[in-house]
Amino acid sequence: MINTLVAKVKRVLQGCNVIAASEEGVKLLGSVGSPFVIRVQIALVLKGIDYKFVPENLANKSELLLKYNPVYKKIPVLVHNEKPISESLVILEYIDETWTQNPIFPSDPYQRAMARFWCKFIDDKCVAAALKSVFMVDEKERKKASEELSNGLQFLEDELKDKFFGGEEIGIVDIAALFIPLLQEVAEFHLFSKGKFPKLHKWSREFYNHPVVKETMPSKEQQFAYFKVVTERLAALSK
Image (cartoon, rainbow, N blue to C red; front, side, top):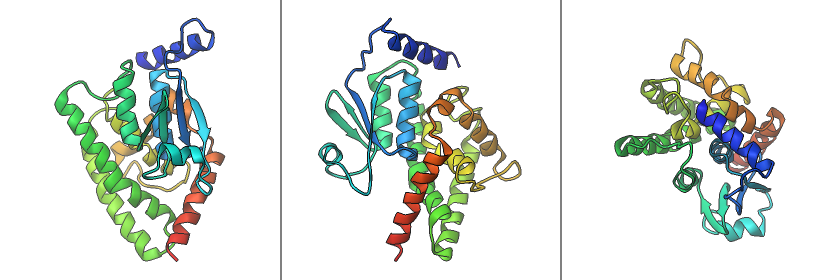
């Protein structure tokens, strides 16, 4: 909590020009409501980094996005002093190494490696399965994805030992896993309950009510609008 307060005071002082915003030249290209973009926004807020948000329309990608991410042509893209970084987990690591205050990665090398492992596990085994479980049109595919997601959530349930995956303060794994409380709260998709995955259920509430997360999270209307686009794209791909 002290880290959060320090970051908030820093942002206020920068806004009043009491201290300089040394992180000038930080832009974030993204769509409002995207969980991958929200990951980056939470990290920037935790660090107290001022940035310019550049909204992107994924149905009509801008020349700026194509310039900064010509390989994948996806959001988010963080641009720091005109140097672009793509892929949310790569961006999070860059942010933590560039601005060392309020670290989101563990300092111990082994724990850092384990944090990277669980972040990759979340993206590989949980994120795609969760989106398909909620938005896939085909019932058979949706059921298959739900089973895959349940298996993934069980591993996370067993891994969660403290208030957050990062201990008493949120860290990289918590940020990577934000899609869980997001789908639970916003899409009203009941991934778990007190009886099913009780530790994840408690963690989800703690994470979603964290001051930085609450400050950063878009409105439900904005997130619904984003997920509507996701639904339409998945439906089109399934035809």
